[in-house]
Length: 228
Image 1 (cartoon, rainbow, N blue to C red):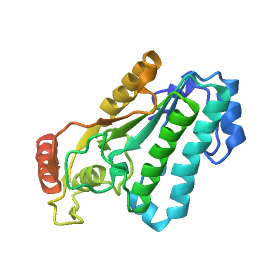
Image 2 (cartoon, rainbow, N blue to C red; image 1 turned 90 degrees about the horizontal axis):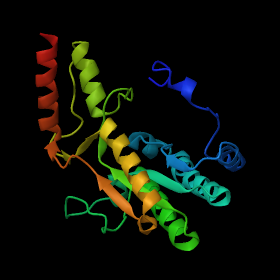
Image 3 (cartoon, rainbow, N blue to C red; image 1 turned 30 degrees about the horizontal axis):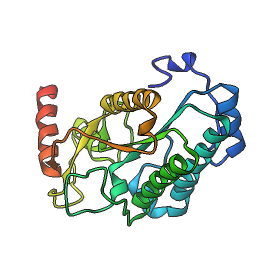
Image 4 (cartoon, rainbow, N blue to C red; image 1 turned 120 degrees about the vertical axis):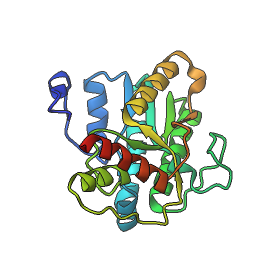
């Protein structure tokens, strides 16, 4: 989508890795970056279970590399795109920002650690960083077919059976990807105008609690209407 919509022509593209600290620092400095949106991560829960070290290197080391590069180059504001998975498991729902970060599994732990590191930089170095914790994202351009929504849509279009990998009773909250982008922009703008937000985290979701079964049924109803 990035290239199809010709967005590449409007951007300066630097290819590299979050583990390459000199490249991060040089890029931020060379392009005089004022606002950094940290969106890069290993975001697949199943991959994190198979490759915990790679996930921690990307999500945790990658975060401290970026924050340190931002500190050294004096970036004006930084937004960390986190996840509600950073909270781990709590009996009290929905999650609120004051709840402890207590991830237990590889992906959860990586997000808990990244958020704590962001708070450390804000408290210790007064780095202007804030954290956005979003619910499960969905929307156009998601080609990760290990996720429920794109896999269900693809299989339905192909006339294949979709298999739910649980009893379907797990409750999930979702957020449309364009709403998430708007949330990131809104938070960055407020951070620029209000230094008191430094180090704070904010939850974003649709606040609609759906079981997996409910979601599957809703999507199938919409697909039937479209395919008629």
